[in-house]
Image (cartoon, rainbow, N blue to C red; front, side, top):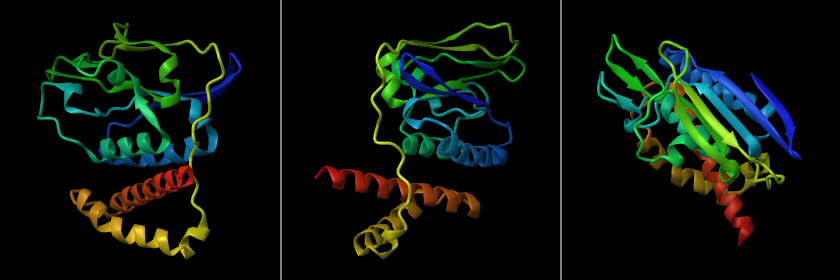
Length: 216
């Protein structure tokens, strides 16, 4: 569910999500979410939060099976990099072990509920926390913002220019980066997932390259 509002002369896109439990369905969910956000939201002032059913790092889990990164977690990190989003709770409290979900029967605690926000909003965050709630197994995630002035727009989201297909410099860069990216993600056995991750990685490489070239 997404709504874009006007707040103190700033447009804010607020998106609430509930990711599926199934790992394969999570991957599809993130792919669909990428397209939805790109089409419907203000990426430079996006606040995205809810139950992700996915931990981002080892510190976010206690008990149960040993933590290990999942394909959906890896795709979520790529999405965060592409859209310039930050995990504000972890950014403000890098070493804090505080969990949003608890299963007494399984002996597991984890932080699977969190806000991802546009990095440009970081300076306006007054508080980020995890608080008790009336739900039996999930806690409340809290985000307090103060936006007295319009938030400056970031560089925005780069869209692929077909003219690059005729540009030798960019084609060579893709050829050079592909073997390295293939090695980086050689643990992904699903061919469709591997293809989607590679596309996002290459798009990210090219967008950064163009951005820095324009600054020179």
